[in-house]
Amino acid sequence: MIIDSDIRQIRELNDGLSVDFQILNCSRGAKAMELLRLFAPSALVLDPTTPGLSGRDFIRQVRSFPWGARLPILALTQITSLRRIEESFDWGADMVFSKPCSAQRVKRKLEDCLGKRLVAGGA
Image (tube, rainbow, N blue to C red):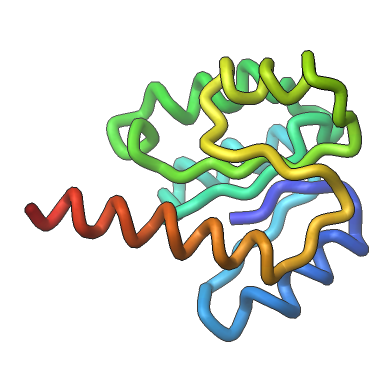
């Protein structure tokens, strides 16, 4: 699932990821939580500054779900201060990328995260 209000970034990710992943897009925070509850995606790519979304509260709420504890969460942000990056990790993000971010880079990280979880879950 991709949560971002940046249409160009969404297009970039959709174009590069849709061959290997089923993509669900959302550009508003309130709708994103509703969709997460309905679909329980296998990974989450989000911009913590998406309108209607408090990155901290959103990620923490996702992590509170039974399936959310192991959900790969990749944060994309235009705010690249060390403080913001550290906050994203503190909130529960597995990786933080600065925008714009290539779909290939996100794809490699998703494959890495999902592969590790599949191996750990199957052991």
